[in-house]
Every structure is written in C-alpha cells, then in structure tokens.
Picture 1 (cartoon, rainbow, N blue to C red):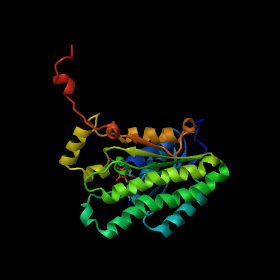
Picture 2 (tube, protein in one colour):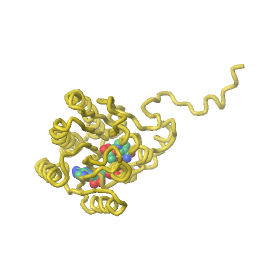
Picture 3 (tube, rainbow, N blue to C red):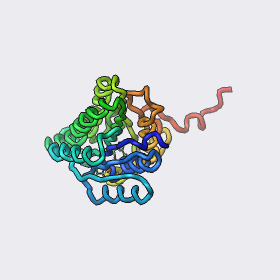
Picture 4 (cartoon, protein in one colour):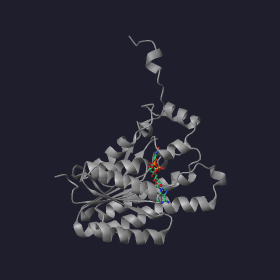
Length: 265
Ligand SMILES: NC(=O)c1ccc[n+]([C@@H]2O[C@H](COP(=O)([O-])OP(=O)(O)OC[C@H]3O[C@@H](n4cnc5c(N)ncnc54)[C@H](O)[C@@H]3O)[C@@H](O)[C@H]2O)c1
C-alpha cells in the first residue's frame, strides 16, 4: 500500500504545468485522492478524468482564487465531498512582467490576492483538519523570483517572497501537530506559463546564468514536491527547496575559464 493511499491532496493550479504533474504523480504513484482547484474548469476536468482513466482518484473544482467568498465555498464543498485535505499544494499563481515604476495598483492587488491571500486561506482551512489528524503536509510552489530580483518582477517576486515568509510562519505554528510546511522554489520550467512569458531574450539570459544551462521539467519540480510530502521528509519544515539547476547558488559564472586558462603546472 502506498504511503498516501488514504490521503486527500488539494492542488491549486492542477489543470496545467507544475500543479498538473504533481497531481498526476500524487494520484497515480502515491495513490492519494487528488482534488484539483483551478479557474479553468475544462482543463481541470480533463486532468481529473485522465487520472481516473489511469486508475487514480481525482475530482476537479472550478474556482477563481481571487474570489475569496467563492474560494471559501469551494473549500467547504471539497471537504464535504472528499474529506479534509491532508496534503496541500499551492501551485496556481499570477505572473506578469511590468516595470516597477509603472506597476498598476489593480495588478498588484490581484497578484497578492491569488499568490498570497488564497494560499493563506487554503492553509488555514487545511490546518484545522491536519491539527485534528496530527498529520499534514503543505507545499507552496514559490519561485527563485521570491529570493532574487528579476526585471519586471515587482509584484510576482514580492508575492513569492511573501509566500516563502508565510511558509516559515505556518511551519513554526503548526509543527507540534505533526504538520510540515515547506516551499519549492523552481527556476524556469517549461510550462504554458513560461511559454507565454519568456521571449528569446529571457531564455538566452537564463541559459547563460543557470549553471546547468537549461530549463527544468515539471517532473523535476514534482519529484521535489513529492519528497516534501513523503513520510521521509517528516523532520523538514519551514524550508524552501530551490529546484533551479544551481541558479540561486551561482554568482560569477565563467563557463570556459578552465578550458581556456593555461594549466597551473
Ligand atoms: N514555470 C516556471 O518557470 C515557474 C518558475 C518558478 C515558479 N513557478 C511557479 O509554479 C507554479 C505553477 O506555474 P506553471 O508554470 O505550472 O503555470 P501554468 O500556467 O502552467 O499553470 C498555472 C495554473 O494555475 C491556474 N490559475 C492561475 N490563476 C488562477 C486563479 N486566479 N484561480 C484559479 N486557478 C488559477 C491556471 O488556470 C493554470 O491551470 C506557479 O506558482 C508559478 O509561480 C513556475
């Protein structure tokens, strides 16, 4: 029997990209019941149906995370239908690239609502169940943009930094209930979000700055999330795990230094 076969996993943004891959792996490899929350009802329904066809358990729920009232109703409906969440993956996010000086207030407020307020409300909801069960795993999908600044990332980067701070805050206040709260900070990953945002300039710059000189895959991010959700990660909490090909570790990166320098001896 798999470690999560009696568990319910709530995954926001599970209709696409990283959230989708995590939902599929949790359902099909770990046998969890996955509940996908996404504003794209058709795509969420398709992912859930695909999981069921492959032998897993999955439900989909349509909600726009910027709608606080709608989110609270959806969380109640999810709990009535599937049970309280044992595992939470906050993956949905709004990402926009806008100059800091001209960042529009409505865009800032929407970014904070989706990327910060919704995860907070979802974690609060789940923790009430996890506290009773004395077990829980929360994994917030943050970003390298929450740690290092990037051109045009005022709203997105600030929201991801808040998500990382929130991860630590919830971690220390839920630790004694057997709950762990961690974040994954992906570097660039080939997903629909990135395909719509990264032009050639961004892709080339990342190629030069990432020691592994490539984008990550959704599988590589999902592996990290599944590890943090596992029994084996029971003593890890409040941590942000960079899955970024070495980006955050890197400073001066001179790829051809040793191939061009003359030998020391
Ligand atoms: N792809 C990357 O390079 C990358 C890098 C670092 C961090 N991340 C983070 O990973 C997470 C997933 O990104 P992705 O690249 O898989 O994106 P994606 O666009 O492929 O998927 C995002 C999903 O979230 C849903 N969503 C967006 N806004 C929503 C809202 N208001 N309400 C409900 N659902 C909503 C979308 O419908 C979509 O299904 C995000 O938190 C993102 O910030 C991604």
